[in-house]
Length: 215
Image (cartoon, rainbow, N blue to C red; front, side, top):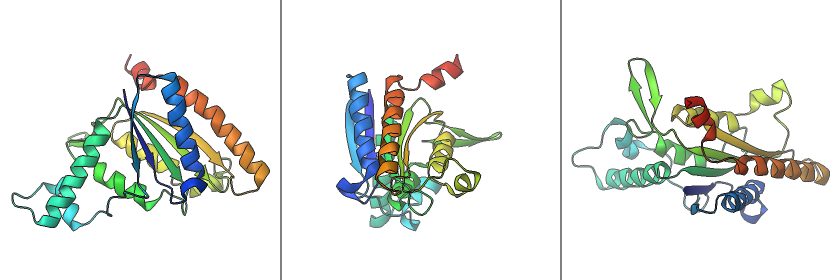
């Protein structure tokens, strides 16, 4: 089994999402010792934001691409191949301005390729990357999950569920620590809740929800 571990926080060792994503990977390997891990730190090795030179993955690669286009196409191919080869993807994401870090969005922009992660049919889009498990380590300074107003402002977990669902992935598990900037007591409570969620998220084998639905 291959696990891809991704971090996107810019805070280094001060990051709650990095702390949680590392604990998820440790717990997953303890529960599933046949797992190999590949690591991608998007704050250190972030793909450039999507540009005209990277459009080849969307509209078709030119027969004779420019040097910039060839470089961008090669990077997109590397990232989508790495993603497709993974059985489990653990993503550490903080909550920046009601959404995800731009580094993480830039990575996702490289994955959205017709014929690789989805296709269009006469009945609409169909995801091609099913059969994976995504575990999101979500951190938030405030609390957004418990009120209608907070949920309306939340475009972090909801976006990730939507985009991976579009890719055909039905098994998206959330490990959340929110309220971590609201004082020591709130932070400790949030981490305790998240660690309980880690035990649940990593105990279940990969993609079991999809298997049950298919059956």
